[in-house]
Length: 234
Image 1 (cartoon, rainbow, N blue to C red):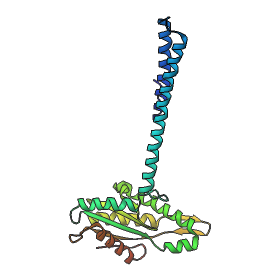
Image 2: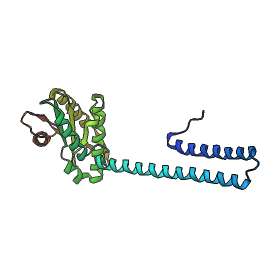
Image 3: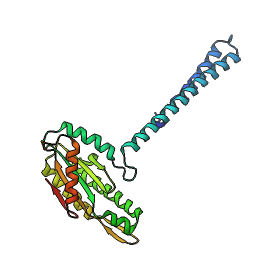
Image 4: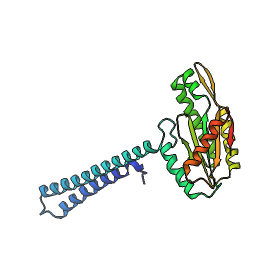
């Protein structure tokens, strides 16, 4: 059997239905001489019109579904880095917070150091390339640990990582790997080679944290206190 690509399967089915329908009515004409050619032609045309209408409806429905997926993509994903955005983070971190016991949920906030200076000295296009490079580096570093789907861009130069069902010691080790990967980045620009570092704030869910916002704000506070390239935790 000849393989048919999934995206053309419906069109292939419609064409086959038309061919079968035409063959059927031609066979009816041969077997029933009393049926005129005009009647046979009318039946074939009616059959083809219905088949085409079905195809048009299918294509319109598929386009609507594609548009819905695109809207969902823009709603939950950052257009520059393709990471999940703040909206997705808030929803998923709230869910993780509600499901976690004390200390079994860790969150990290990562800020690229001196990012404003990068934009001022190199320009915003280079700043964007730096954000993309950091996003890709973090995704690659997290993938072996299976936390790459818990990475978000939650601000301009801010990234966040959710570590569900994870001890803070393990999360700290992973974050140190992330910092090391960023330190090894080199962006070769016309104005020179750009090297990056990142400060990270790390915390777990405390017993007195009555909502996810408090936990996340504490991680952000630790990140703001950290020296360039440093990791600060509770």
